[in-house]
Image (cartoon, rainbow, N blue to C red):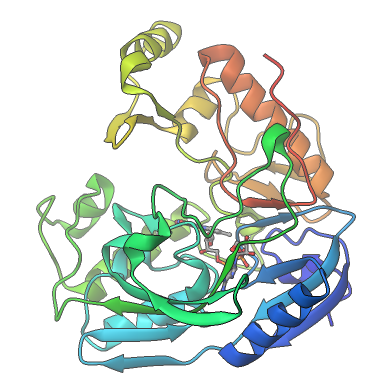
Length: 359
Ligand SMILES: Cc1cc2nc3c(=O)[nH]c(=O)nc-3n(C[C@H](O)[C@H](O)[C@H](O)COP(=O)(O)OP(=O)(O)OC[C@H]3O[C@@H](n4cnc5c(N)ncnc54)[C@H](O)[C@@H]3O)c2cc1C
């Protein structure tokens, strides 16, 4: 049993848990969660710990570490246990000559967590290739394969994700359903459409076209390494949860006024992308234009923005969760003060709070 949950998180932050159960099969995960639920014991599911910000005080409940990890490929269908390491799953799909997941190379964590926030990168989200998800329903104790359409998959969200409670705290109850396995229906040979300009340029590909999945995987890993977005224990820039904030989506009705305000304040045109419910802005761009440069620490010694990517908040080795959230608060409040746009955290906060915005 790990003494501290910092041993299970990519931030290397988080205090102790009351109990820890490592589960090496789907049945063991379902049984562990069911046993806790029967006695009202709070449960924290942990895969790779790469999207978790856990309080310094730890978690007053049982950590269920999802660690079953088989991957089976049958034709163009890939089925992965929830605990399979996601990048191994992507590598296995590419090695088998299958396309679809290559743009999601290098994302840390487990296969089972990918639908939780509908992971995405370089213009692709898992939602595009998910065929079915096997869930353990905590309310009924039943196990069932469900269609992805039932999961409410959206931009870095789904109904499986624990969202912040009002005021910025988080609920300890955990998600209603536990992912036991994920199934993807992939393409026989061609990559996903390469829509992300930076990746298309790196590949010398036509935007919107397809390429060899192995070439796309190599290019994505190279791009990600340059941004500190591939785990490397020796590089503190990767002691993070990846992007700490989601890109803000402003409602269509107010988008023009907000963009005009930002452009007046900066004298530059701000990156903006169409989104289903409005216009998506770039959180990293706004953070830099609000005066927070790469490596910014605001006088703190244990945490700072990554020196490679403004959107990643990192532990420099001696950080605490309290210090990290204080930096997050300063950045969020600074962006709001300058542009009137509120950034929201992407990771799941456990027992920890991002203090409410002080406009
Ligand atoms: C360097 C770095 C780069 C990153 N880049 C990206 C990126 O490009 N795109 C992106 O989308 N994300 C990115 N992330 C975030 C993170 O890797 C993903 O969200 C990943 O899917 C989390 O997987 P995990 O197994 O580590 O989840 P954990 O951190 O262990 O858990 C995250 C949440 O999911 C829940 N959970 C875990 N397993 C299950 C399960 N089996 N069933 C139900 N709930 C579960 C947990 O309780 C928790 O609420 C990055 C993180 C890092 C550190």
